[in-house]
Image (tube, rainbow, N blue to C red; front, side, top):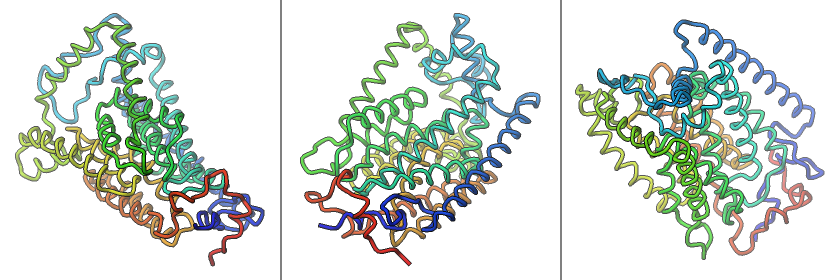
Length: 448
């Protein structure tokens, strides 16, 4: 049995056993670093707000157009019409064309907001998505995935501050916010699923599982493709002997929430909108998917081959491959954080169109990899790989397909962040989070 103190390095704690975070052993230095994070965050978010206002003021507005599609559909529903606009596909579609193609429930939910100015809804949309990102980062840091001991509260605070400071400068997330895209909420929604892994060898609590299932159902009801994560949950290997279906509670909550969403939608609008939705999907099925800004593999291969008509059949092929990869990751990848990362990437490849900002769904994987590597021998390597992924993600705004290189660097970081053999508690003797005292943590040697 390893000592509890070996699980959390003392670089994250002070002599009294209370965490002081990740900025150093000096409390004064810690306070200064946190202040710097707040200043950097204030500058970054102020700059993004100014940019958003300027883009909204242009004619036509260059910001919030994804959200505008949802609000326009909600206004049509409020007026007693269909959320779908058949004229959008009358003359053929390109990958970059904008039209409402979400399930009817999205427009129905937004009806109460349809009478508000777009700038006001966009402001609330962005504030909510950012708050969700920061809260999820704090939760992931509090109980790092792959560790059995509860992390010091200061690690949670520092992770939240670093996330708040870094987010406005990370272009994929900033673009999702400026466009008002639903994907800006994916760090929160996919992060809820990641939290079900946070107990390491233990079974997640019922509340955590229900919240994860509800989050997955909401994401799937809006974008459809996150539903492939349910396949991953169903096929996932158990972390605890005797637990046959580690994701059963999450799957059950997802199914129950999804059924409730559909039931409410049918009660509000009847079957008609759902029939129109299926018809609309068929009408849009002939859209030209090949585009430089569509970073999906089908689009990029079609462009390389010089035949854009290949994009549609290739999209079907890659959708099948993505499902196979999802099952393989669930069964073959032992580290559940890396396994979930593969499942999320596969869910993005299932889509016929993958925009530059879609991989923000992987942000919870990056946060979890960083927090569980704090104080570990490879901690600096993990940080370096994540910083490299961050930089490449920003540079990829010029060459969107290069974002896959950032994803590859993220997986390098995840692999390096794996708990080292011999440092992980034995499954039958590992201390519970409640049994890890501050005194035991403080007795660990201080890394020099």
